[in-house]
Image (tube, rainbow, N blue to C red):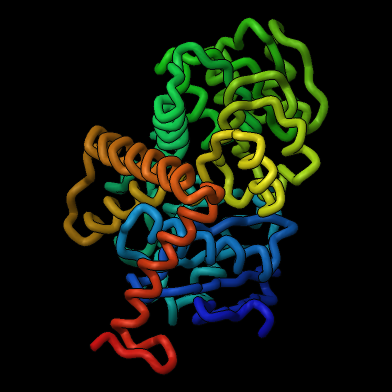
Amino acid sequence: MFELIDEWGPEKIVCVSDARTGMRGVLVIDNTARGMGKGGTRMSSTVSVGEVARLARNMTWKWAGVDLFYGGAKAGIWADPHARSKEAVLRAFVRALRNEVPEEYVFGLDVGLTEKDAAILLDEVGGRGGSVGTPHALGGLPYDELGVTGYGVAEAADAAAQAIGLTTSSLSVSIQGFGAVGAATAKRFAELGATVVAVSTSQGGLHNPDGLDVSSLLDLRRQYGDSLVSHYSDAKPLAASEELSIAADVLIPAALQDVIDADLARTLPATIVVEGANLPSSPQAQSVLFERGVTVVPDFIANAGGVVAAAVAMDFRHSGMRPEPAAVFENISKKLRACATETLEASYVQGRTTHEVARSAAQDRVREAMVFRGRVPGNTAF
């Protein structure tokens, strides 16, 4: 586990278990120089300490990348998110982290968890400040219901299109993953006038070069979940991962990490790639895309709509007041459009990939905070 530690962190790795429920989980607090640890909690039968550590580090860059004052952290639970024991496992996980939550870490949503799960987390913590992303009925800001992350992905894509002289309404879009992020991304793209030509779920994909009916897809998702692909008729079925190489102007990888490698990057037909998922591309792939002139908005900028919303929710968590969704969407649009545009301009000027320039800017902010706090060996702020 020591190999996970470098100059940035992690500051704390907490592994927990519960024999009665079979719960096994981990909390990684990566870097708190700019604020307390905040990041989503995922539940998966394949989650690992290394995976959670990577995601926690990505959260460090995400918070700093959009210049919000929280620290990188992430939690993971090794369990089937569809099992009947889910609630018991969640409650056991919260109890095991009573020393860290909510003073050092606040729960949020990630893969495998929903607003209903956030409500359980909040109930087990026993206070309003233990979790964000909770249902509207509990005074929360329900991220998945509102689609804040996907909304931000589409806004970042629109800003990227404008930066290279294109109009979003003239573009075709392929979206990998039609969960909370992908669905909300498609919805916002439709509002912006783009043509969504391909989508995929864990059950398969759909393609229609003339465009898919996003409204129908959203309705089918509400009814059937990932199996919506079996109930939509006006499209050609796609094999697994085929949506990544479908002819489309914009590609949105919004599923899991590590889906774009160097080989795919060499042939990928998209002009713009906007990373809705965390860590979807390798550094080698990023270099290839840069050399080919493909415009890429990095994950920790593109999918930061969720952290912008989380920051708003965190500000309101002790006030007893509910954040207004319209103001949250406005904040997400303003923040992500500015960050995407600045990143693309810096990439062009510096001749480096967008990931490199965005990460460098985030690292500068984190390092400055670490210096002021006296956390850098041999350096002081004054």
